[in-house]
Image (cartoon, rainbow, N blue to C red; front, side, top):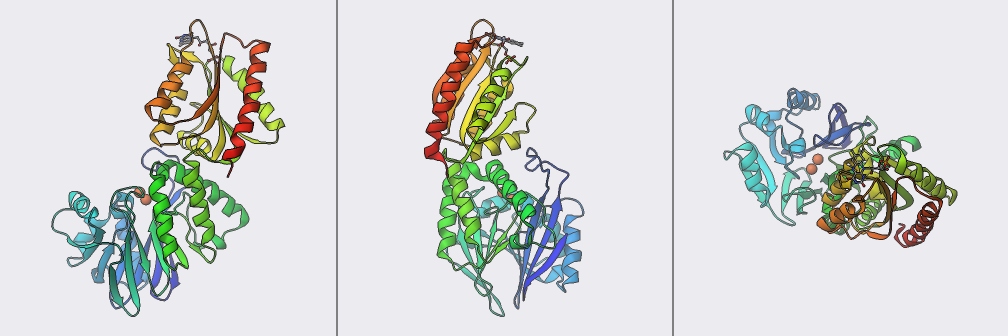
Length: 407
Ligand SMILES: Cc1cc2nc3c(=O)[nH]c(=O)nc-3n(C[C@H](O)[C@H](O)[C@H](O)COP(=O)(O)O)c2cc1C
Ligand SMILES: [Fe+2]
Ligand SMILES: [Fe+2]
């Protein structure tokens, strides 16, 4: 666990994890951090705690001891978000402290009781409510429902102008002693930028309308530091991470980078041959291509790259009257994530009676994804020259259409 003094009476404690799947499904090649913050006035509050895994709360108590904080003297647990990655330690904390208050929103109260029992002392807060910790440290609370779960809120500390944002403005990637983004090297920043997109697309994209509301609320406050629950903290030019999140909320509605994702699957390489022709064509036009070969590409990467690309080419053969399942499954996942409005096209091979394209449009309709599929081309067996030409024309048209969606 890393521990760092950010300001007088303000500490960051973060725990890095890299040997699990986030939400038990998203890979973590660069790990993830779970950040907690300690605010010391006359009274002490801890904001965004830790997961309840064996040994983790105990490690937190030991770290607190090093900064002269006895867990018994923590008066408030500020729970911006009740997901167990931030609140799981409450059960353990009850054993070491018998007099603390948990601060949550009205929507959080029943969730808190459901997970951690009816015996907790709870302080329910609404928009603008404050908690004076003494010595100039005053917290204010700003509910932002459904920036993941219904009870989520932002907490702001007036004296340090710090915004505690929990999942909002978060990223995958571990945190070192250099916990602020501006302390990272250019290479590390580039990794974090990719990891922010992957985190947003995997964890938050379904909630993009609420993310926009949370951004608006951030702008109403005089913020000098954004202290996240996952990934680096931000200070100085905090507008950069806000602008990134603004873009991502729009990627969820079909906007994206000037890049093309090719989402494909092929059993014997028949469709894949055409995929490579298409890849070369897009690259000749100077655009970056992401090859998302299902099921070999991870679901996490697939979601991230489709999400962040303004153009999406889907290619899959027919399998038992429907779309090749790994690609159908990917489209289904994108639908669950509400990734809508993408400029797209489709092609694929079949043996005797096609079914992939129909299956594709059925999935798009099921999730009301509103992808703009102007061209669909299915070919029997190996694609003929004339069919390859048609597919190339469709790609050129896609590249024109997607220009309006580039952010
Ligand atoms: C397990 C399996 C199921 C298939 N089901 C169908 C089908 O229902 N309808 C059809 O027209 N072709 C079907 N085919 C034929 C493939 O769609 C055809 O061989 C196609 O060229 C495969 O392209 P690919 O190598 O890109 O996967 C099936 C092939 C396999 C191996
Ligand atoms: Fe969460
Ligand atoms: Fe989280």
